[in-house]
Image (tube, rainbow, N blue to C red; front, side):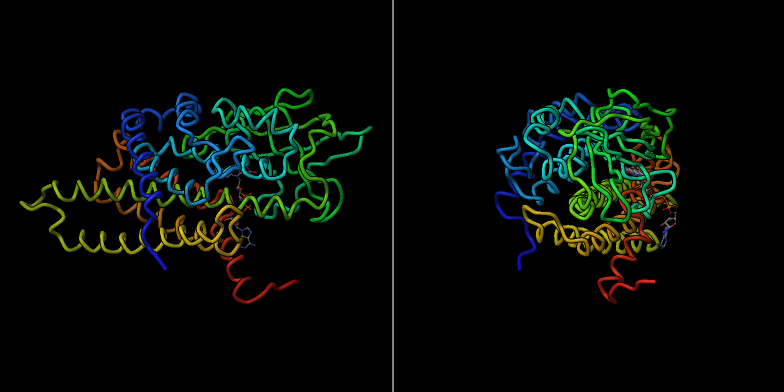
Length: 378
Ligand SMILES: Cc1cc2nc3c(=O)[nH]c(=O)nc-3n(C[C@H](O)[C@H](O)[C@H](O)COP(=O)(O)OP(=O)(O)OC[C@H]3O[C@@H](n4cnc5c(N)ncnc54)[C@H](O)[C@@H]3O)c2cc1C
């Protein structure tokens, strides 16, 4: 068992860190407060070969492992927290499920521009009446000739205002086995957006409405019975969420450390107060533990999808402790930490959202308990 990055992983981390510090750090504050998608960063990342890191080269990816993507997202986040969203979109998000199950025709049309940093794909699972209980989704796919008519609505869809296409979970028939997915081009007739709304993080989302949208057969990704395969791929998205949580927490921790070592009150550096020292000790334990659980989940997956159990444990640790570390770090900076002149309050808001997005803490605990105790069916 080794606890250090391998030499080539270390070199890759150094390269991404250099790029992030040279190209992204200067605009980090401005980017964090801009709700628009950072397309300039997206194109730069594509030029750097940071999109599709763990997708096969035959799909236009880099043929690497999930660990490579974790290393990249965390290195970018350490210099520019907002830019880590671009690594998420190009490596961990719906792009990964799409690349696994999409047809050659679908990939030619949509994957190429995504990996070039010029387009986005969003995943539409959550609905007004189906959040944690996602298998209760109602958006329907009804046969019409060779294709399908889609009716329903999705909420909270990340990047939807900027997406070229939605990987939309739909119901072909009853029960969990009736769920599959289709691609809905956002230019399709019958597709419309609701009003622009913002999360606490500043990210924009809009409700999506499908009013009898026609989906030709070539836009079907997985037919009925596809849900379990899709949700296995969604574990990658969850790890990207976990990786950003702990990376943003580390960003806050580093800021708090520098601050505590120079800020003087009562004639002493505040790092000299035991009350502050213990905060750092507790944060360090949480940072290391969460990081190891994240690496464990990613390493065990290698080029495949991480297991549901490993993912739930890693995501819970990173989300819960990431939020706590960001919060304590902000406290150490006092009023400066609470100010929008620094990025700590932004990181705290983002970490708060990841405790809900992609499976809330409670749902993760249900999944972990299921592994420990077995599944109870009522
Ligand atoms: C920042 C952000 C980005 C998101 N991006 C996307 C996206 O791109 N695509 C998408 O489809 N969705 C997205 N979502 C939606 C997200 O997946 C849902 O918010 C999440 O699944 C929870 O659903 P809900 O909000 O409807 O809460 P609910 O399911 O209504 O839950 C409310 C509360 O009850 C708890 N709860 C529910 N069931 C149980 C249970 N069995 N046991 C214990 N507690 C329970 C929950 O943990 C939560 O605290 C995003 C959400 C956020 C915040």
